Length: 113
Image (tube, rainbow, N blue to C red; front, side, top):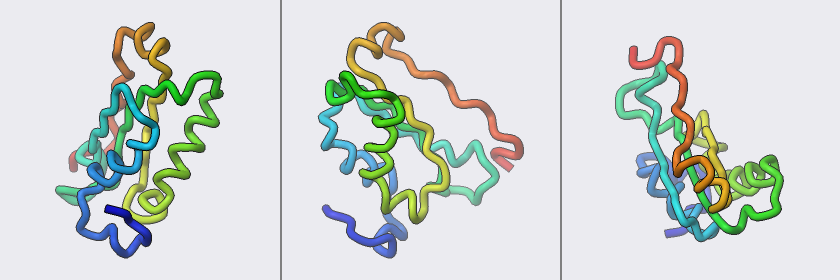
């Protein structure tokens, strides 16, 4: 499935679209968490996501470059329904050094209201 315009995103499973688009990074580990429920949004929203991605493609790349690549890959989602995107992007070695764990997200003020 190829998504070419923001209009086609309405009603879509945004996490599935994110997963599909991030497959180009050939992840060794990919986790996409919808954290919208932690924020002051309507029930069943798909606006706030946390992505943890481990890829050899990040070798030798500064963190800001990694983020730019993800933003480019998800430009339609970021222009439309996705309001916030927390990115945790690692090389396999960095992921192993971290004990295969990413930081927890802080609670949002007003979340879950």
